[in-house]
Length: 280
Image 1 (tube, rainbow, N blue to C red):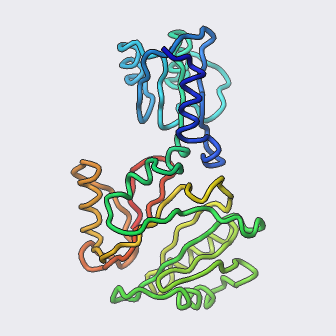
Image 2: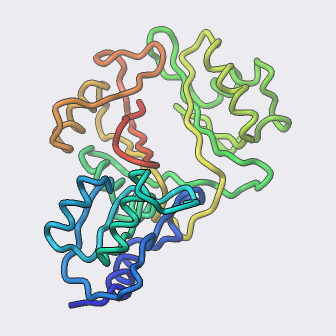
């Protein structure tokens, strides 16, 4: 049997904790005072009281919970709140708790790569760009006309600059292609950008990442797949449902989009917490 430190060392090698988002709480979260050898590891998405009872029933020494059961600081560990009850029970039973969370999302061949693997195309990493530290976010914008024709990056820039959102004052352009515009801005400017998207006569939508560096080019919190052949949104959803083995999938459609008409030549997959929503 391995020691707890040996198992934790292996988990860190699988996905270095340095890959996790800056806001996250990852790593060894509960370490009992009485050290035990690890003979059984219990895996879960969320550590609830029912899950803990199941782990206890199989004599688990270590629980690996994807989502961190400990996030905000505890002022007391008592039985009047379910989260503190879990920590108290783990300590009393000598059960350690480890959470990898966004380090598993970002690592090469991790959860995000597995999710995007159901599509046929060229996959690239979505990374925060530490180009200009005075800007806190990297934003990627796309837009369509009323007939769902995709606009190019130059056209999207014209739309953005026709509002009160001014280059060099509110944002800095990073680059563009025939379907997207990427720029840097601060969190306060995201509010203005959201208003631009809401009141524009075009179907304008965007997603934002924090502007922070990651250790290597093969890691990042998201992936972009450039399809070999275009897909309707509905076809993309069916692929993901089969891949996940689920009957239903919650999605967020851009304004003016429909499941069967709009053709996509790429898919952007971004994970922060869990596989709850597909942003299209």
